[in-house]
Length: 232
Ligand SMILES: [Zn+2]
Image (tube, rainbow, N blue to C red; front, side):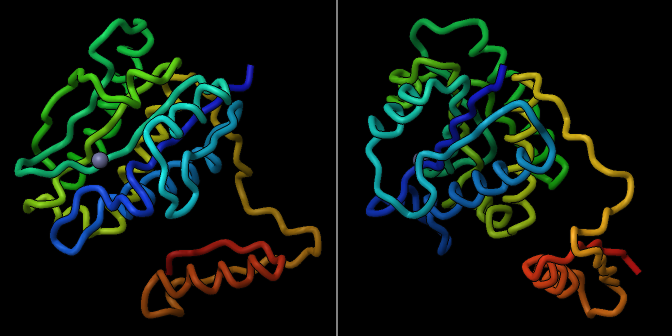
């Protein structure tokens, strides 16, 4: 059976969420969810996914949970950034009656995200918690809310790095996929030429840095060519 995943980037539009160190929570949560969805798409099958906000829309908490309930999502993930002084990562599930699956999901998601953060130098695990948050209370499916470091402390140094946000997003995706038991997407061992038969090798060595090679690859892709990037 195809599983339905509902992502919820916290805040948005008129509500920036927490603010600090020139960062806005609503921007960070949107990026993390974007990276999560990209990673899901690239690596797993057997699911559909959607997000409560694809852009900078203003949404009430009830609008978010209504979407998930109406769509009959199997899992709901609300992504947030903490504030108020402190350090580290924590996750929440509802503090009322919950299914054992909800607990299992928190365990899996928390472990994946914390492991990714540790790899990047985050040391504080604030733990797996329970709270009476609207998005957790009002959702009918397995739901978990993550607070990904603090925007108003030195944690912001992590949050300013795009690669960190990407790693955190991808870890969320792995947590969801693991919990749902999604099959991995089978990938071709070597790049296959596109329908028009043109395959471009983009060599990173020819550029001052990899992002330029990525840019060229993206441009070629847009024109319908298959590309693959080679380091050196
Ligand atoms: Zn928030």
